[in-house]
Image 1 (cartoon, rainbow, N blue to C red):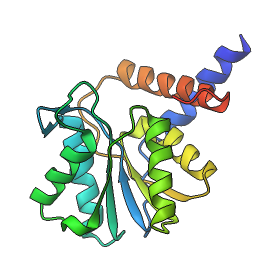
Image 2 (image 1 turned 90 degrees about the vertical axis):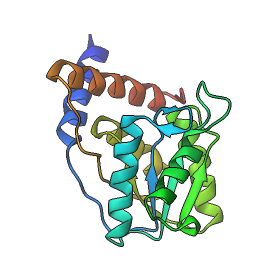
Image 3 (image 1 turned 30 degrees about the horizontal axis):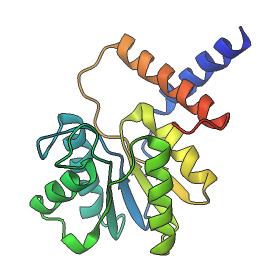
Length: 182
């Protein structure tokens, strides 16, 4: 019963923070991957990439990192599709960094952190869906980075679906805290 109460309370906390944008000047904007379809970003990934491009054009960071592995498509990665999309939107190729090996949030962030360290990057703005921000920010903060978040614009969703997404992130965060890296 305690565990369920913890998850519900955490879900409420995640939900209350999901629309909070605290983006501030940083070294890099990290765009969390989402599905791609035959070399084209899914609607969710497109919204994330457009939002990251907007932050970049406001000069909030020198780099954008596009993340995400192959998923179910052996020909493309989410990170690579994101890079192509950003270049098509006028972002200079030299400003785009790709992490294309991650297949979970934790693995993606671990690989991204290694790239950050090699490039001497210490701060980042996370771009993802609002419900994802809490967990991603905590993971990167634990790795020693200064992190702010800027959630993409909300799409059409129901209250029930938003609640479920926040609860699912609360469960994923609790598992991560317990040492299960998903």
